[in-house]
Length: 150
Image (cartoon, rainbow, N blue to C red; front, side, top):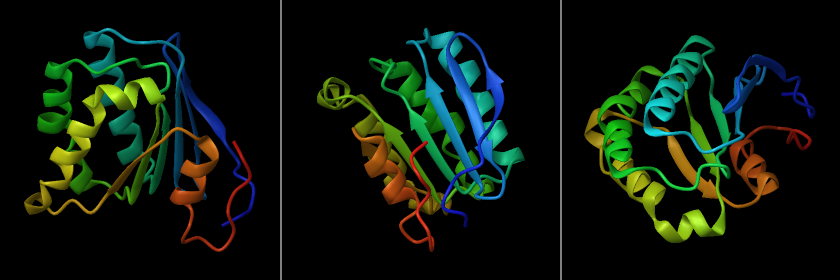
């Protein structure tokens, strides 16, 4: 892998921007504002579809603009989106969050539920970070050259 990611934008709206590096099999999602439940589900489904279509291996989601995930949306992610991981090439999913969001434990509940679903044959590793640099380091730790910051 090259030490610098070659990101190209594939989606942009008022909620988020999606860039990919097809060579590195990397998708980077940056949320700009907190979505309501309907927008969250629509956009997350689109992101899952993009990940499958691009055969992404690494996903970095900068979700610091998302203040919380509604309980119903947490259950939707677990019920509807997590099974898609089995069909994907996704090896690692890193989520950037704030200390305040971590304190709410909403996404931690989702991560714990995913880890308990090993019977689905899901091998994707999930991790939470408050530092973009640490997330990139973790995503690409097994690669020969770490990419520069994005």
